[in-house]
Amino acid sequence: MHDFEKNALSKVPEVTLAFWIVKIAATTLGETAGDAVSMSMHLGYLIGTAIFAAIFLVSVFFQIKADRFRPFLYWLTIIATTTVGTTLADFADRSLGIGYAGGTTLLVILLLASLAVWHRTLGSISVGNVSSPKAEMFYWVTIMFSQTLGTALGDWTADSAGLGYQGGALVFTGLLALVALAYYKTRVSRTLLFWAAFVLTRPLGAVVGDFLDKPLNAGGLALDRYSASGALFSFIVASILIFRQRAARQGH
Image (cartoon, rainbow, N blue to C red; front, top):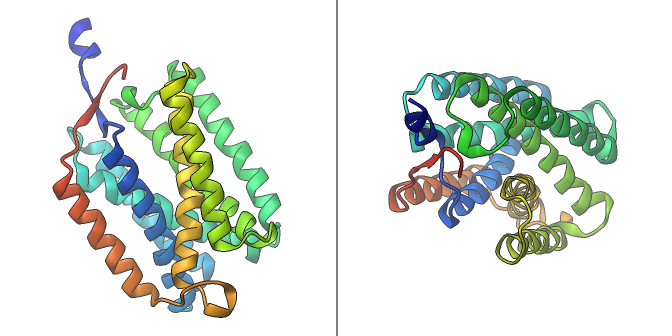
């Protein structure tokens, strides 16, 4: 029984280059799709958050009920976390008026608290151990906080810090490169590096998404949000079909 548990498959994919490619595309889609619903449809951040939160909860329910790793269901849930993260962060930053700095600080605290409680409860925050309903709940709550944090951090960097969307993209690409360098050149905890990369890919996607759909006078390309979202969604589907993903094994 011990050997079976040790080799049991996780409900999340192996962390490969394909994983990060799809993750960045999904976070970019979260920005364009979130903006499409809250801004282009004129529904506002609160209603947009309610819509995407409902999709997120339904997706997580079926993800937890699934008997094994199912790529399309997994990435649908990821997209749901990144869209609700976009509208929730925008609601907190702009509608509630706490600003990018306040929103970022609050979400850093929530993310660290989620990781701490997860580790204290189950003894590990490794994605290779996400094979039980309790571990999955911690996993998806942590991801939702990380996606929301990434939106606030991306907006803060591009707007408040004055770096713009291209400057912000360069900053987060550089930080991700440092994480990759640490992965290949040091013995820093792989779990720590995974969560660092996971968080950093979200603001990268946020600034790239904003660059695609924001007006020209704001530094964007003014692309149609619906078309950009459709193109990104198609790219994600194609990537899932082309790059066959396997479930991560426990302990990896």
